[in-house]
Image (cartoon, rainbow, N blue to C red):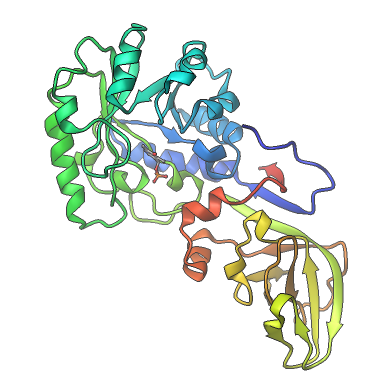
Length: 350
Ligand SMILES: *Cc1c(COP(=O)(O)O)cnc(C)c1O
């Protein structure tokens, strides 16, 4: 489902750096060596906009796009010749009509899906479970003859612990996948997400499926942080001066220890500006850090602008939203932070 169109009246703006998405994708593609490099653009392109994210990576050379569901295919119609869209949840019985009318292919995840799809005679991908116990055929099902006669383009599995380099499940999943994949006829084999692409050549097979690393989260395969993609700015609605001892916001959790100037900005937890950033987030005006003062509310946050006293109502302030830093501050995952950004922003693609 596409988000609502940006409105000029929107009070917070998400600036999406498409050059950074392209450069992150190129870093994965280079590290993939002989393997192809796809892109996971599910959850509206990790919150940055699936249509624009897909157009950016396709222009950079990507030919494999992954979404979670058939509803998410809608934003990716009219791809250039040779670009493949695959649906990671496969196809359930009630989705058969939409799948058959679509040029996207399902990544079949259960024996029931395999049986139903085989009758269509159409190509597909298959997900096998090698130890995560989420979606996919078990190794026993995979090797039972169930897949005989199925036209498999790509055989997939997915790593549970790729961001923990030495986790024993990585090597165990790799060994299980290599063993099974060698016995199933498929055009390509794919195992690695973003973090998996950094685990070494053995994990890359014929195709990698990075997502987070394209959008400014996690690390590039070489170990450098992914280039930041999103920046948030919010409109200041009111500037107010409060006396020493005055409290701010719900629960009065901030008490001014000196005369303090506050900027009240149109940004809150409904915009994915986590409530856990209350009293610990920061905004920035002309390079001056302005700490969050009091609780983040649904639609508003207050920042201490005593050090940047020239700010007036109507100004835009930059909100510090380095996803790795915000993840540390809030205890949330980088995935949650990006996909939780919400649909009230006006989005600018640069
Ligand atoms: C989401 C997803 C990816 C991308 O994972 P990242 O960790 O974001 O790189 C790859 N493969 C599958 C099966 C996924 O569900």
